[in-house]
Amino acid sequence: MLDQMPDKEKMTDLIGKDLYDVWNKLCSLIDEKYDMDCMWNEGGKAWTYEYKYRRGGKTLCALYARENCVGFMVILGKDERLKFENDRENYSKEVQRIYDETKTYHDGKWMMFELSDTSMFDDFIRLLRIKRKPNRK
Picture 1 (cartoon, one colour):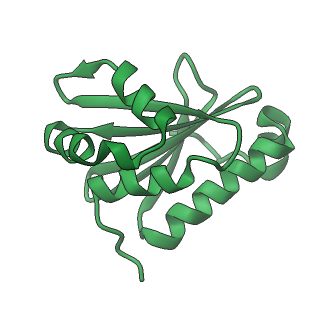
Picture 2 (tube, one colour):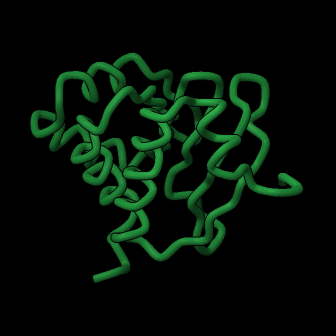
Picture 3 (spheres, helix red, strand yellow):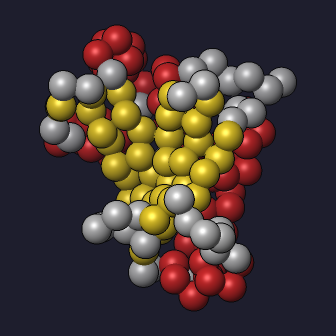
């Protein structure tokens, strides 16, 4: 857990103004559909920060930040992978590629997307719907 969450200035210095806009748009999109507990953490070896969406002990997704880079992670468990595979043709080629290239662990596929713009947001929301139905109207 971080002592304090990074402010706008710290985030902008880290990832740049354009990616900070992408980060905020993705957070707004998730916040619009899901009422979740959000937690800032240190990002481990590969990232500076982790921003995790959780509810009832289960993680919905997480955003990651490091110098000039933003990541979005969704973990699909066994049943969730089946749902994705049954609907995969409705996802962009990029999402299908990342799904196929992601290693499957005992607890699921940890899909990490590095963002440069908002082009995959519709796919992200569809992936999140597999994990949990939106709980905001």
